[in-house]
Image (cartoon, rainbow, N blue to C red; front, side, top):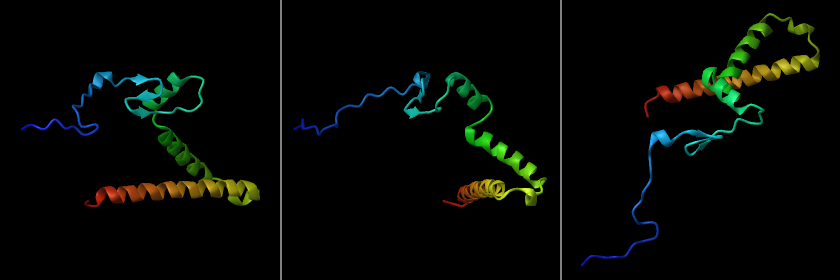
Length: 111
């Protein structure tokens, strides 16, 4: 005797998984939403992210360049407010480096 009992949501499932349907539509790519922030030219933002790099990568390169410049500045000549800005920047860069190192250690350690 065959049972005809079906629990909720236990019927056949049909889902189209076609990569050619995964197109960028507005700020959505498949089931992933990408928020580009407030911008007057979202297409330009997408092109920059695609060709130049992510915001994180862009900021990382700016941070690296600022570290070079800061190394050539006489920090004793800065006002307390200016020195605080440099110290905050340096702390933030060190925190980023720590997170990157932690990720590298996790990645290299056996699971």
